[in-house]
Image (cartoon, rainbow, N blue to C red):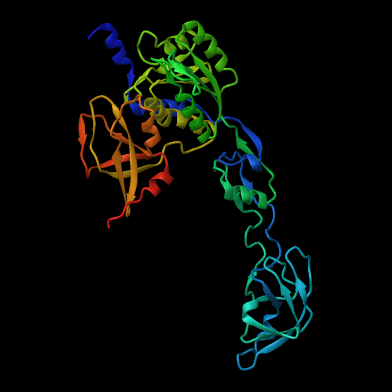
Length: 424
């Protein structure tokens, strides 16, 4: 083995070690106030404690009649009790009182009149000439939402670190919180490299390809809740790389590059970044695909160097970049969801690398089934589009056959659920 090969082999870092390094290298960003319309998917940076009972008055659970339960004690089908209707109260009305010996019509959500202790639904009574006839005794509290049934003063409603979904945002609105302190969205700059790349609207000449990585990364970052800034494509030139990288880092919390990450004559990104002051934690990872992935710090700015091959860039984003972005955004759980699945095809791993296999996972009964995609070439764009999961194979050499159980990382639960199979 040559001296150069020996050096490169020494640079190769274990997959688990690389994940641990990137997950501990960054901290959660500072917090800011966000309005209700800007909270979806963000992480709470404060606790929310109820400051009042909600709703503080009893409300009707049905459309019907508010009454005193004691007035119905003698009611029976043979001898219905007739009580005159003395008016009606609607949702949004204020306090009303129930006169002795009467009932009041009431709509769902309306405040229960003073002295009333039950509501009887319309369908359980007969009404003739302004009189309600009741055929059975009504229990106190029937069809009434009691005060503070939803929220009690002093209750913890939301804890710092929780991810805000639609229902939690509704709860904040219900308790009168128009703003909430949340962790800031990470600002991520994306710079693509490669003289062969052309824009999506261009017709590639021989030797050129359209730039799909940019759009994949921008979408993946958006999916993680980041604010992504596309910094364009730069040709394989040290001078141009320096200028573009220096511009891309301005205002960023994280810098991503794609392409130029390997050891070829025009793979310049790592050397240029190092000349500009980036301190690399590692330059290569024992992973297939994605071995050229590198991570370093440019002062306080994390830098991820992704391979240019689309499948490799996609896998490296999921395994290394995604946890960084989610950690910055305040998430405490940053790993992809995992399941154990039964293999329906064949897969293998070679010595010295963790193998990440693009796959399709489905459900049959209570069992997960996973099928590796046929062509695992890292240069393909279609494979990530077809995959809803990743099979994680341990370092080999090892062969996995149909029926074996493997670890699967789920990328798209909706797709997994829609791929249900039956045993007709």
